[in-house]
Amino acid sequence: MKRITIAIDGYSSCGKSTLAKQLAKELGYTYIDSGAMYRAATLYMLENDISPENIPAVVDALRHIKIEFRINPVNGQQETYLNEGNVEREIRSMQISNLVSPMSAIAEVRAAMVAQQQELGKAKGVVMDGRDIGTVVFPDAELKLFMTAKPRIRAQRRFEELMAKGDGSSFEEVYQNVLSRDLIDTTRKVGPLVKATNAIEIDNSHITREEQYNLALNYALQTIHQLSAKAD
Ligand code: DC
Image 1 (cartoon, rainbow, N blue to C red):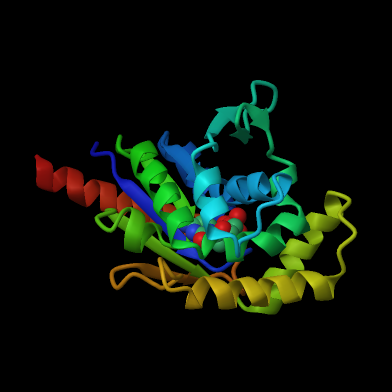
Image 2 (cartoon, rainbow, N blue to C red):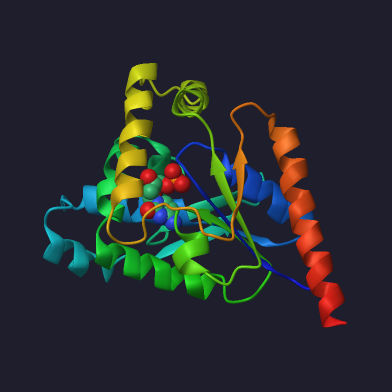
């Protein structure tokens, strides 16, 4: 069977990473969370007191950032490492969520992350989720999915996740964060969130995770079978 690249883009808190992980597991592909890379870079800037307004300092800092994904042997989950330290938990905090969009709007930050993502995805058999995967990182991806859901529904899902982790943010804070990230992600000059012309849109406002997974898996299997038949 031909191994393909699957690009999953869409708005914040749309369940992209859950879907991407499920697909990667089922197909035996590698999952790459591009948002975690922007979050880890943002954490580095925060820890080193570098503001997104200070572009020369941001550019200099990019040389000192090494981001990797490692599998936790205990639970089998993929975790993000920044300069050898496990930052998986820290990068999901509201503080990072509030800072990550301005940081990821910087052209130099995007260029550095895109180059690393292209390197990580060189070998086929990859599912990568983000905002510009089907448009910038892998414009030739064989399957592109674009996920949307109503902002209030996304905020409610995110709020429940944060509550379960003991984060004390209010629903209103989470909702405002979703709206502000949507605005910054869709209006930035470099690599804005936009549906690739050949992407398949999935609005998951009113479908279950399972329905969405089955839909996406069908698209993936169809694409793999079609391309494998062509190659024969
Ligand atoms: O997928 P996420 O919510 O963890 O991503 C965090 C932020 O990173 C998001 O607000 C925008 C940015 N991002 C990006 O600009 N490009 C990507 N490919 C992935 C994420």
